[in-house]
Image (cartoon, rainbow, N blue to C red; front, top):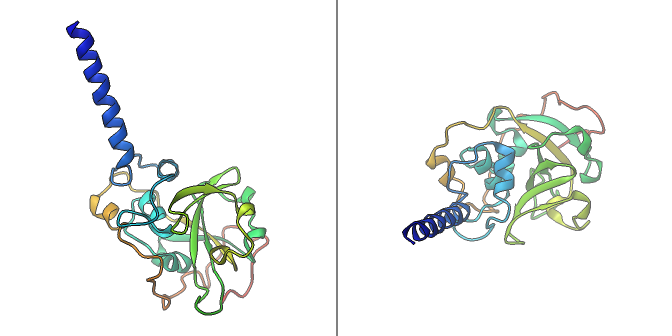
Length: 211
């Protein structure tokens, strides 16, 4: 009888630990594989104090301090490499990019938008992407073809970028915590464009004369 009670207690503890681990997954240092962590964060909040905006999701998954979508568009001071540039999302060649690659959508160039990186999403493979969209309220997977034509977050030219270094094997809570309390609307448009004269890793179907 005692062994049965002990077995139930252990099982209950394991279930509770698993539940807490899942509910607190954005704060925990595992998994530290970038693409695996992206998928692990599927369903996390994209609103509120502990919600991710689009750039915070990718920063957290890679174990980085918070990089804005504008910083990603501009290269983040060498942290990202330019893979390709496309005239719009319909020209993105998913067969030529890798899981973990990031699409930075330029956005409209008319006011109130500036056209220097409005939204980011990460590629998971097999035509599936993942992003954090405050309008939706949670992190979710999607296909580019399913996005509405009029959605301003997915308009304009697209830069495909890739982390220039592997995700850190050892995580730091300060880096993880830095990706919370972020805003979709506070960004610096005066950043130097690191990609202005950088050679792309893919040179097909690309956009020209990006402003």
